[in-house]
Length: 315
Image 1 (cartoon, rainbow, N blue to C red):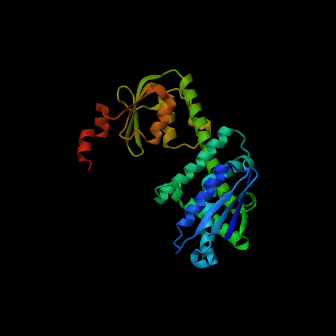
Image 2 (cartoon, one colour):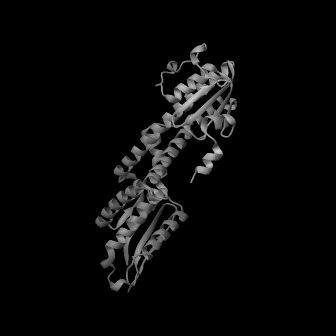
Image 3 (cartoon, helix red, strand yellow):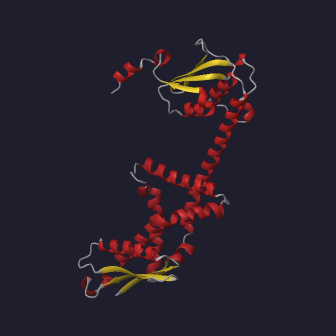
């Protein structure tokens, strides 16, 4: 006995077979005595169908007794399938059509920011996998509720029609995700352009001093010393470079970079116990092969403490 029918247009046989198998497997996991529900399919290159059926003589001869559970099971499989297999394409469509991005590289990058945002959300929530993220589960439930409503009204569903005409709320949530990702994409691109500008200033300047020691004493505490281990005063130099010229709010990172570019050392020795700190990574990116990161020299021990003793005191 046929309960529900899912119609699909212009899809490969492998796609229909896979989706039918997913539905069939989910039906088998329903805890129903004498479970006789199954999913079968027919395929041609233009129009295909997946049928959810109850075998004759199963489920106490009354398959409609469990129709609500079967409907919910089918809706859950389809909703999960849409999020897993169709969401990437929908996001790309929104990035291209709504936000007017045309370059494939930009669309790829923004889609990557979308996925990164979802992964970070999962990590903040403590979920082990992106598939468990609250945002993803919310979107699946949103689609599931819509599908259940439609399958209550009519036992036949066009998946293509659902994707084309019934996803307004779902697409709005994806649009918000894409909008946030685009903001991140733009800020990172501006940051890279800013870094490139600083690299240019470094490139065109001749070295004014042979060595600078950037000492990271911890947290946000830094000092900059010359080759004689004396504090550097950037005001003593002809400051042809000023951060204000770049119309950028001055912060600690800017001040350090500005000073280093102003004094233009031939070599920069960075003494730190935390080489992955953002400011240090930024300086290494700007000054490239002029930089050397050090954690265990005499200067490190003098200003940062004996690393061996710190290791011994560590739990």
